[in-house]
Amino acid sequence: MSDDLSTRLIHHPYKPPEGFEGVAPGVYKASTVFFPNVEALRTTDWKDKSGYTYGLHGTPTTFTLEERIATIEGGLHCVLAPSGLAAVSLVDMALLRQGDEVLIPDNAYGPGKSFASVELAAWGITHRYFDAMDPADLARKIGPATRLVWLEAPGSVTLEFPDLPALVARVREVNAQRGADQRPVVTALDNTWGAGIAFAPFDLGVDISVQALTKYPSGGADVLMGSVVTRDLALHRQVLLTHMRLGLNIGVNDAELVLRGLSSMALRYHAQDASTRELATWMQQQAGVVQVLHPALPGSPGHATWQRDATAAACLFSAVFDASISQARIDAFCDSLRLFKLGWSWAGPISLCAPYDIGGSRSLGWPHAGGLVRFAVGLESVHDLRADLAQALTALNP
Ligand SMILES: *Cc1c(COP(=O)(O)O)cnc(C)c1O
Image 1: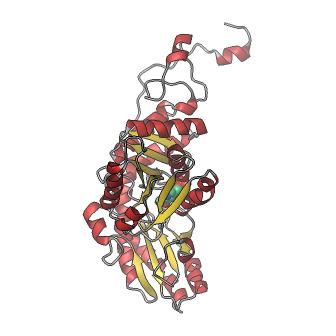
Image 2 (image 1 turned 180 degrees about the vertical axis):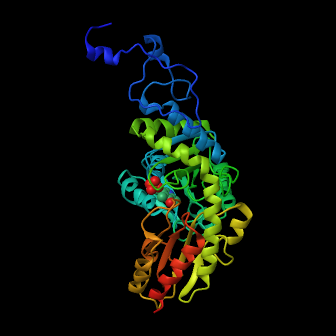
Image 3 (image 1 turned 135 degrees about the vertical axis):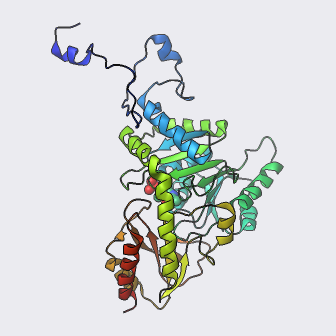
């Protein structure tokens, strides 16, 4: 070994003893990983997780997280992306080519719609919006160029719960009629709301399940990450190779935080579910509130389907206000909340709210004239949260 300290600091003979095992999986950081010899450098394969080749292609930490996310959703394979939105656009890029068409629910996550209307459009990929609550509308809109159908349960912000088995059945009918030379239509579900807890996405028939791990799996409101889970190996390989070519990476310290969050995810999901139902039910009785949107509330769109297909509900509800209440008063209500903070995202410890202009974001119309506020319920005492809503409602109904 060299006499030069700079070399000896790097090529150091000490090796810690083997056999350390704790509750949390180890955090392995790398761009470079070593190969024992040239033969191994040439032949090691990372795609089936049988070896390590480069940090971008996986570490023990990221492989562990991928396996756990796939397990939670009842899938077999998982690819991790830098955000939920990156997971959505990754699926688009992996499956769509020039001349193809993608169908998107009109009530889908807005930035995913923007990716289609701006980026995909620029690459010669067309998109159409369908009414997720009307399987016949989806059937009418599937054309010869359709390759991908997005699904979301429930819809973003307005929380209509669709009949996923019926929507998937329409796609399968089309695939059964397609010749062997024609690529089938793939279904991809944004499963952020269900998180693998409210229902089993692959049992309802979807081909791909995408999540923003930013929400429940993290649970801390301090990490951005996404996942793409499949049961089909060929589909997984297609997504994996596009992911590799795009050079998408997630930081292992972020993977560590999500692994830590997973241990408490089911407890958090059910606790927030209970608080949310209580507050949503209470909110529905308040003056000036026309409707509360939450799949577990009778009268909320898709309630019966939610009852049939799901066993739990996430921490979101939206209140639609009477059309006579001005946006300025709705804004004053939001500004008056103390425990509910103003901000995007959900499933973190702190309750959040945000006003939305739904009419302005829908191509197929929206039945309400009044303003809407979406609430994301955190882990605070539900009693305190109700009191916060009650005091802020005086700003709405002075
Ligand atoms: C938050 C969210 C996303 C995007 O996740 P990010 O990690 O914030 O990019 C996608 N879909 C749904 C339904 C979401 O709620």
